[in-house]
Structure formats: structure tokens, C-alpha cells
Length: 253
Image 1 (cartoon, rainbow, N blue to C red):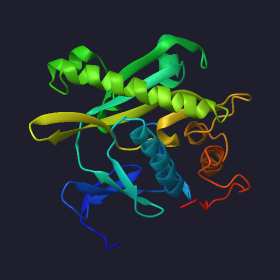
Image 2 (tube, helix red, strand yellow):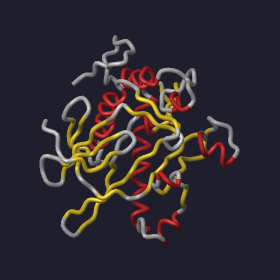
Image 3 (cartoon, one colour):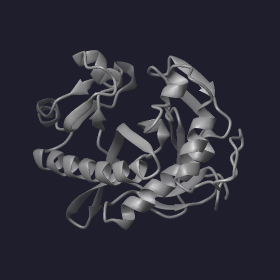
Image 4 (cartoon, one colour):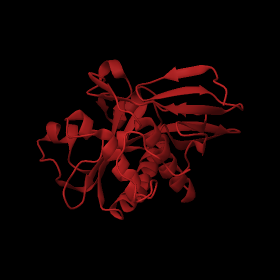
């Protein structure tokens, strides 16, 4: 398709004007970043994998009645999504202690949590996306109390779906983050899952071995990131089971 006007470029994606009003073309880059972009690299094929995996997850969520911005995949690196107003929060759901939670609270990585815990971070790269409470969110007008109730409900539904899906292919969903968008239908506002859902935004551990299959592979130099994402895609049926790990993944259309 013809290249359109660029709206925004982030660490992992570029957004372009869509072909119709109210739509956006989301392009997945091969760039990998960690530690608030202090560590950077280009991982060949990563954008292709994340585009296809995000399509897979978003389509599944749409199918069970969880609204998302995803409309359709356009090609190997681009998808058409619904334009929305992004709530300036990262919504994190944790099933096991890991990462910053383990550091903050001194809980050993991999410890099961009593129940899924929902956390919020304020989206600001310059500040390092700081953890915030519902009091901060309400006080600064980032979301209303009703919004927060709806966001938690959405996040927990995503968690139920994703946890079961991953468990079925031998993967533990340790935690994940999503972003939420606002869309307006007449006088009514609706909250939807936006941005992406991919191994970039999750912690995924093999159920039997504990092998990491997410961006921690890049963060902590644990191997080839493309191999890890390819393994996730293959287990989910996004790639043929007989396919081998490769820098340029051949994905099912």
C-alpha cells in the first residue's frame, strides 16, 4: 500500500494515517529496546513476528467479546487498527512475582501471587514510566473511577484468556502489560484494548524448564530473541510446527 503520513514513531512501532477516517496503520519495527531504551538493537524478523502474534491475540480477544482496536492485518509488518484516544497508563497484570515487583518487594522471581495483581504505570519515557496508584490517576484526571473499574475488568478478562491460551501450549504467563484506548460512539465512551499484545509486552516461561520466551532474553542476554518469539509463534500454530528457528520467519497468512 502507498505510504501515508506518519503520525507517531515509538520504540517498536510507527503509526501512519489509515485509508479511511478513524483508522490507523500500525507498522511493527525490528528494533528492540530495554531498560527505558538504554539498551538497543535491531532483531531481524522481530517486527514480522510481533505483527502476526498481536493479530492472533487481538483476534482471539475480539472473538470472546473483549473489544480491541484491531481491524485486520494488511501485510507482514502492518495492521489496520481503529483510531482511539490512548489512556496515558500502562496496565500491568501479574500472576507471578518477576522483574520490578521482585525488586521492589523482595519476592523471589517465580513466586505465585495469591491472585492476579493489577498495577498502573504513568506513560512517560522521560520519567521511566513510574508506578502510580488509583489516587494519582483520579487526582490528575487520567481516568475516572468508572474508567478504572472498567480497565481492571478488561485487564482481568485478557489475563483469563491469555493465561489459558498459553498454558495450553506449555507456557506460563508470568505477567503482561496492555494499553487502553477510548472510543466514542455517539455520546457514549467505550474502553478498548489498544497498542499491541506480543512477547515484547509479556513474560513467558516454559512450564517445564522455566526457559524465558519473551523480551527478557534480550534484556539479560539469554540467547536469540527471534528464536524465542518464533518458538511462541510455532507453539500457538502461527508458524508451521515443522518450521525451524530462523532470522526471517515464514508465517502463515
